[in-house]
Amino acid sequence: MKKEQRHYLDQKNLKLFLTCKDHTVSRETFNLYLDEDNDLLITLPRPSDLELPGYYQSEAYISHTDSKESLMDKVYQMIKNYSIKKKLNMINGLTRQKGLLLDIGCGTGDFLASCQKDGWKVKGIEPNEKARDLSGKKLEAKELVSNDIHFLLESHQGKFDVITMWHVLEHVPNLMEYIQQLKLLLKPDGLIVIAVPNFKSYDANHYKENWAAYDVPRHLGHFSDTAIKNVFGKFDLEVIKTLPLIFDSFYVSLLSEKYKTGKSNFFSAFKTGLLSNLKAKSSKQYSSLIYLIKNSN
Image (cartoon, rainbow, N blue to C red; front, top):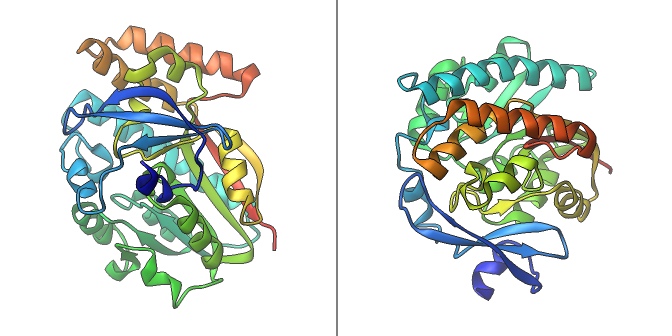
């Protein structure tokens, strides 16, 4: 455990929180350990760097495709298209000018393509070859998308006005090293936009080990608002605002119902998603949260 733990945070105060199954690929079970010092959950055992790509090899892993075949595909694509417009409008409202934007984990490239059409200069990072090829076809220059952040560290340090990670941080195996790299790429007054599931939400507590947003072992870290503030604060990166992703509770609940019962149970999922959002109006613990993080030096 100690060797795997060092890939994430150098914390020894870990407590078993939950045991979950990989419903997408392997059907294997993984443990979630609570790092009490940072209010962060860590997936163990962590697959090796060579093993991890195999856990993404599934047609059910929808963010790497443009599929619209199943009901779940159609719901996902509909929400994605709506969300892209909202994300772009949000970023435009936070910045003085449209400069250089990096989208890490850009998937099939729809968000990047929208930013490019809107006047942003863009770069993308996507490890999955199939998704990377799809994204390249949507952008004006295919070489705008790389497969690894290290390709940018020599040529783009201190260059990016905005770095976005839409449901990507939870996939990062070397958390602290990665945040340090984000810091290096960001302009002194630049902005990082992070969207992650929130394991403190009502729907997470309701579905427990069947909560789809745990998505082990692809999700290696599971964040609370305290965890985000703690880990980014170590690099003088300050959370200046937190925003909800309203639709995530419905989509995650729909998947969670299937994991729990073997059926989609649309009405039960809708009820849980709605209740999660209603409770979050006072608790602020939405199913997923967007964190706006400012470089403070």
